[in-house]
Amino acid sequence: DFALARRPTYVKVDLDAILNNLKILKANLASHTEIIGIVKANAYGHGAIPVAKFLEGHGISHFAVATALEGEELRTAGIHCNIQVLGNAVEDDIPTLYQNRLIPTIADEIFLSSWLCYWRRMQSNTLGVQTDHPVGSVVIKIDTGMSRNGCQPEKLQSLIEVCENNRIPIHSVMTHFAQSWDDPEFTQLQMDIFMETVEPYRKRGLKLHVANSGAIARKVGVDLDFVRPGISMYGQPPDTSEYGISMTKSMGLKPAISWYAKPTIVNQLEPGRFVGYDKTYKCSKRETIATIPLGYADGYLRNLFGQSYVTTLNGTPCSVVGRISMDAITVKLPDDVNESEFCVISADLNDCNSVVEISRKQNTIPYEVCTNINKRVPRVYK
Ligand code: PLP
Image (cartoon, rainbow, N blue to C red; front, side, top):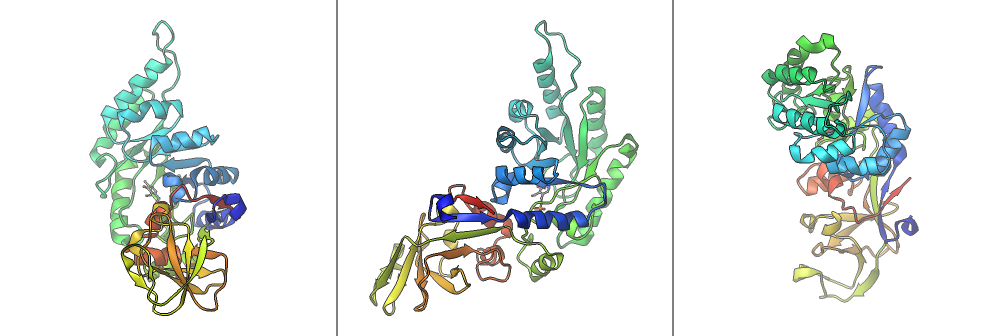
């Protein structure tokens, strides 16, 4: 694996775990409900292109990314499926959206009219006469209470009219939940607003989707046309609560990401020697300190200072001591540890260096820990 990585540190992505998670998620859905695989932010750090290719090979026909450039990256890599770009669509993105056949998520008529103009201009013949090609499809997003992306419910009608009058295909209509994992009442409120808003148009066969991982776990919106799992597909809980961990375990989801490294040097240091920037760690006796070639620029964040561990491959914790540098950490090895390979992030939810445990220490959520792992750390797929 290190040879594959061409660097003495690599992130291992367990594609079988992703497949396992996908099967579990599917078992929670109605038989007609399709999955939109969320592969934004480099597939939550797992590598957008290999993950999307893998999912495409396992029958996933829709993906969503956050930016038009992320969509372009997937198209360039040969992904053929539908690719939705989440977030409020903006005019500056239109050429990239058009060239890569991406599906924008729209929230206002201003974007729609720019979209229409661009498509008409690109598809008119040399005399400037409009040909009869359809315009690229769009997803309409309704804001049902998160107040971030999407149109207000009362705007849906006019957006649908603009689309219908101009033969802009509506791929689907969606909303997004603010707290589907642990606030079922608010989620239901959002769901009710959504279903009420789309009700008059359902006869026209509009496709609908609402559910992220939290909603799928709680079986909200799992019988609509699509669901949009992200974090659960990667086998992590959305937060660091005991509820999150036990729910993830009881569903049978498996973390797909782990991170390994080999020391670049191991020193026996005399008592009194300092380790790292700012001399924050001083050896109290003769100690074995290993330097591991990854740091905060790789996504092993500096605020883990004084509280993190790497483990040996059989699980012995070794304290990370001293400051976390940009490109290196220093690890105090217990006397009986003589290993040449360490686990920096474990795929086992019970370990002291699981994504959840690291999230706790950083006072953040598993999404941030995974997406922070920089692209310069090679990914190895198993
Ligand atoms: N749908 C939308 C619109 C999102 O922004 C996200 C992620 O932020 C998801 C779905 C996936 O959410 P999760 O990773 O919690 O499943």
